[in-house]
Image (cartoon, rainbow, N blue to C red; front, side, top):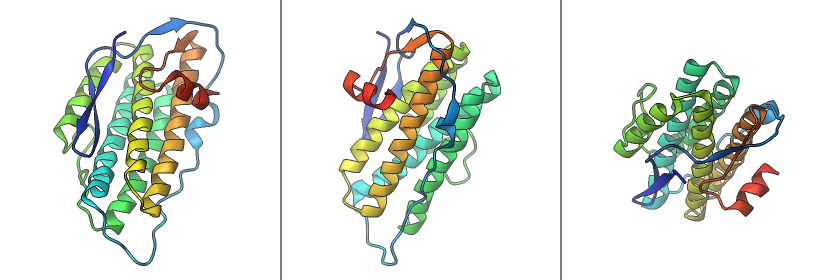
Length: 216
């Protein structure tokens, strides 16, 4: 199976696209985007007394801020290429994910790695390479673009879970939990979009059991 490899970056995980994303087989289906682009994302809830973050917690927040930007920017670019509403809807949700992490960055006095960078521009070189590769892959066809979207969400879920395990900060835990729920909704949306086209998505990074729990 062709696959994408997750490459560790310090305390968290980057994504590197190596070849085309996952195998997809034919199957009957008739599910639309539906409610999944409109999940309610709770913004970061912060306390009056700001505690310091460990190096690992700070690194994770900053990395996930840019990783969510990868997702948003890929979907914005795919929306311009394919004019398919799934990409536009989810790109708006990814902006909310970025905003939630920016709230944390501002609350704890961290330096935002996104800054004024435009679409497709990243501070982290690994994520820059990831974005470039994803755009090439997703530009082949709308089906390839939907596969890329599903793969991004799978890995995003796994990375967020790892970050969640590495923090005991309640505020940050809440944000990660909200982002995980959002990414699960996005994964369902891409899977449904493929099913509408008579395709069934095979998970590439989540276990079958984890994937089925999310999809069902």
